[in-house]
Length: 398
Image (cartoon, rainbow, N blue to C red; front, side):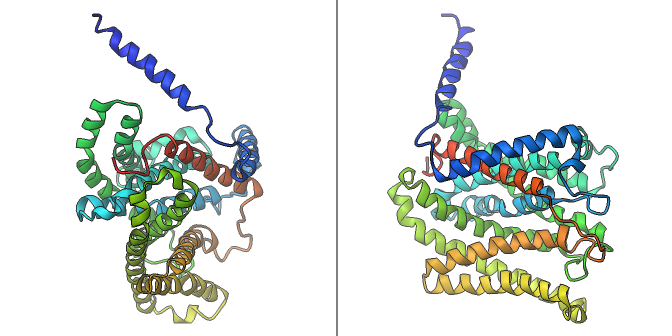
């Protein structure tokens, strides 16, 4: 027997299997496809002009506003809402609370796709995308810069998420020996991933410590790294509730009866965790506000806008989560999750866009091309997510 032929035979088998899996399944004329396909095609056309004519042809970026909608929404917000992956990994693998195991794989998949696609969005926003390697190797930034730290956290955590999800990929490809090997690495990978993500979430906030003169005093604080870390916990949990609600309806045929029965119990646990962390976050905000003596800043348009964020999208959802968990009102929990996700989005936009250069008369507003490309990124991520969950064992415990 020619042992050298085995790898080639295995490669041929997998290639045939993979191309067979690429064939579409189900109906094509669905509402999501009808909406998303034109947006994706329009986004690709816009990206052609972006890379041939430069950022100025399709964006409203300037020297005063280096962070645009692609970074402010895709990267800053997307990374925060992907925090559910490291939170649930900590709950399942460290605290050993097994009831969340049924939603762990899909949460890790969402986190992995978020980091992959949002890192792609970061490349779109760079004037010279080929220089993206500079912060990773410390060139022009130095090894003591926050950007160097964030870049490595981002890179390593994306790799950790891939390793955490890799046993599912190996099982799908029928690589049983590789699946067992990868499964044995799960615990160590999870511990590394949790550590990296905690540092990464706070590191993104630390980048804004250098922009004190540019950020409105109501949003600037030396505790921004801590606030970004805590908000990524309840933001990630709220996103798990939001995505889980959609997935349980759209992919109900892929979810086993045991997971269906435990769905309400999982929802209550996630809501309780979100309520607790939101209360802690609100306590930090109140402490920072009073310690900084910012009362005089409230009387004005910026102060009213700050109260909309803090009360409307932090305090009220916090009480809604607590009420929903106490009274087993799942509708209230789901509405609170949506409000929380919107609150995290609003907070990140306030820090890096809206309240950034707040005194400048010519404010930045994203162009329609920037919005179309952002929608394209989100839609392509949903397409990849749908392809994966309909072919791999994501919604069931192996």
